[in-house]
Length: 88
Length: 88
Length: 167
Length: 167
Image (cartoon, rainbow over all chains, first blue to last red; front, side):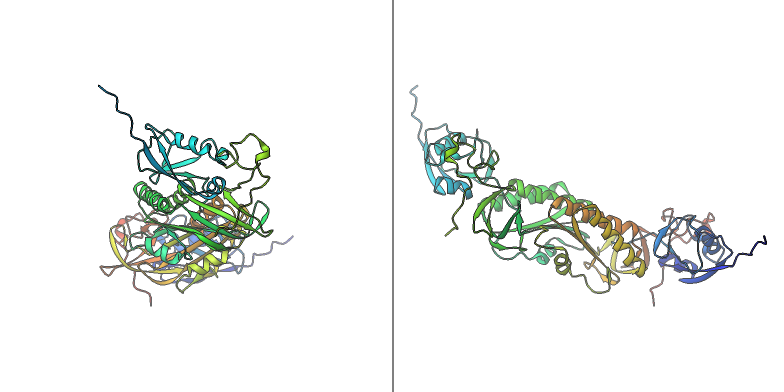
C-alpha cells in the first residue's frame, strides 16, 4: 500500500513571564511533521534567538494540562511553556 | 519547743457549668486546718448534697492556674472545679 | 480581651496579626453547628471562667510565639450563639506558612484542652444539655470526668440530665 | 472564577464554604511582604495563564473535596498589588477541624506547585525582577528550571536580569 505523506500539524505555543521576555514574544505558531512531541517543540524554540536560555526541562502544559516532554502533539494544540511558578 | 496550733485557712471554691448545677451553688468558702490540698477540698465538696456525683479527678485550678489534686492550698486561694471543657 | 460577647470580627483579627514582614496568615474559625450526635441543635450558650480564660489564652499565645516565629491572636465568644455564628477564631501570621499553620493548629488544640469555657446546647425538642468535649452530660453517657461517674447507685442518676435555662 | 483583579474578600470566601453542618473553617491568606532575600520590595505584579489557572484550581478543589469531607474555596489576585495586600486566600470548611486544616494546607501547597501564576517584584532601588519559587531569576542564582540554565557560556548570562516594567 502507498505510504501517505504525513499532513503537517500546527500548534500554538504560548510563553509567559521570564520566558516571554527571553524569547521576545509570548505566542507563536509552529508546524511539525507528525509525530511531534513537546520536546520537539522545545527544540524548535531553542533554535530561536534567546531560546538557548530555556532550561533543559521547563514545565509544559498542553490544552491547559501539565504534560511531560514526551507527550505527542496534535494539530490545534495549545502548548504553554511555563517558567517556575510563583503563585501564592 | 511548744507546738503552735495551725491557724485555719479559708479558700473560695468556685463551681461552673454542670458542677454548679449538681451542687446547687457556684461559690462557697471552705476552711481547713493546714496542710490542706486540692484533694482535701474535693473530699469536702463530695460530702455535700450532690457532691457524690463529682468525678474522681475533676480538672482544678488554683488562682487561675491548672493544678493537680495534691497541690497545697493557702489561705485566700481561689480554687475552681472545672467540668470537662467545651470551648472552641 | 480574649473573651467577648459580641460577634467575632474575623477581618479585625486577621489585621491584628498581619504585617509587612509576615506574609502568611493561617486562621481557624469554629462555628455553631446545627446538629450534635444526631440531634438537632437550635442554639448554644457558652459560659466561661472569665478571668482564667484571659490568663490561659495569654499563656497559649505567649507559648506559641516563643515556639514559632509567629504573631498569634484569638477570640472566643460567650453568651447566646445561633447556628452558623463563629464561637472561636484563631489567627497566626508568619513569614513562613508552615509556622503559621502549625501555630494556628496548636492554639486551637490547646484552647480546647486548657481554656475554661463550657457550652450548653438547646435542642429542637426543647431539652438543654451541657456538652463536654463532644459528649453530653447524662447519667449513662458521661465519660470519666463527667458528673455522675462518682455514684455507684444508678437509681441516683437521671437517665438524662436536663438543665434549666439560666436566669 | 478563581482569579480576580479585585482585592480579595476574605469574609465572602469564608461564607462561601461555611454551613450549618461544617463547623470548622481553616483558612490561609498570603499577603505581599515588604522584603525578599534582603531587598526592600515596594510592590508586586502578578500575571497568570488565566484559562489554565481556572482549570487547575478547579482540579485542586475537586481533588481535595474527594479526599476529605470538606468544602473548599480559593482565590488568587493578579495585577498590581501593594505591600500587605492579600494575593491568595484559601478556605476549607468541614465538620472536623482536622480535615479542614489538612485540606487548607493541601490546597495552598498544590496551588504553589501547579497553578500557572508568576510574580514580578519591584524593588526600592528601582529594579524589577521575576520571582521564581522564592528565587529571583538571575544568571548565577537561577535554579535548574530557571532561564539561563541552558547556556554554558557564562558570558552570555547577565549578572542579573533586569526586566522592563510592562506596558
